[in-house]
Length: 102
Image (cartoon, rainbow, N blue to C red; front, side):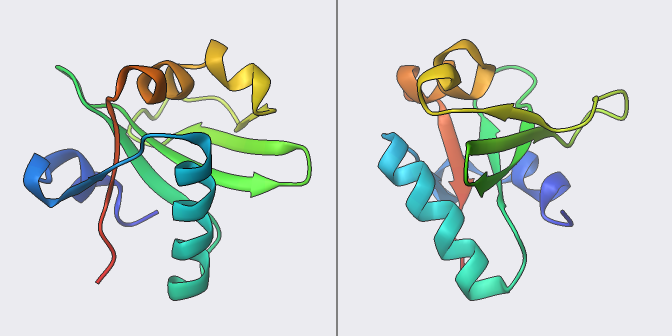
C-alpha cells in the first residue's frame, strides 16, 4: 500500500477514471497482474480525497480506507451492496479514480 500517499496528491490529469463496476474489477486485476501485489489503491475526489485499498474475493470486494489510522479492518461488500459504501457512491457520481500504472 505504498502508493497511498502519492495517490491523494496525484494531479487529476494523471488519474484514471473508474466509471463502472467492470472498470473497478478490471483495474484491480490489472494491478495484481502487473505488480504481483493484491488489490489496488483508489481515491475519491473531493475536499479530503479519501484513499481506499480494494481487493477482489469470491464474495465481492474487500475495501479498506488506507489514509486513516483509525480505520477498522477491511469491509466486505458484494457488488449490489457497494452502493451503500462511499466507494460505490463515488463510482456512481463519477468521482472514483486510480493512478495509471506505468
